[in-house]
Image (cartoon, rainbow, N blue to C red; front, side, top):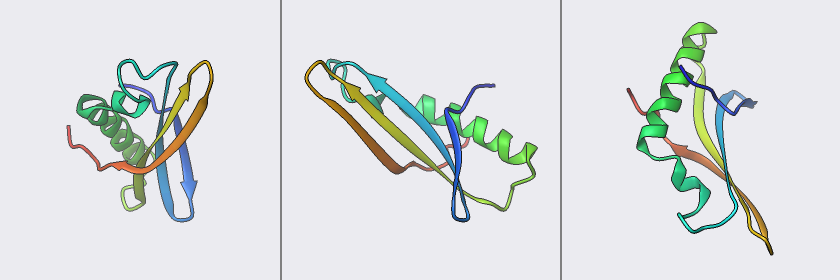
Length: 88
């Protein structure tokens, strides 16, 4: 079905985290790779996980960690609540 990079818990919220890394911004920043198709796929994985673990009533959110590793600079950005659940 797919994979989730990181599943974490912050207080009473389950956090599904997608990590994207790029070595240049030639095709845009890393977070742009989490497009609507990727969001749908991540949503499917998260829904399956929540159902399998019987966490239907648990708060959840999607974060993205965008990592840019250019020759002369490195940048890491956490984007909390990057997108809402995207029903497949």
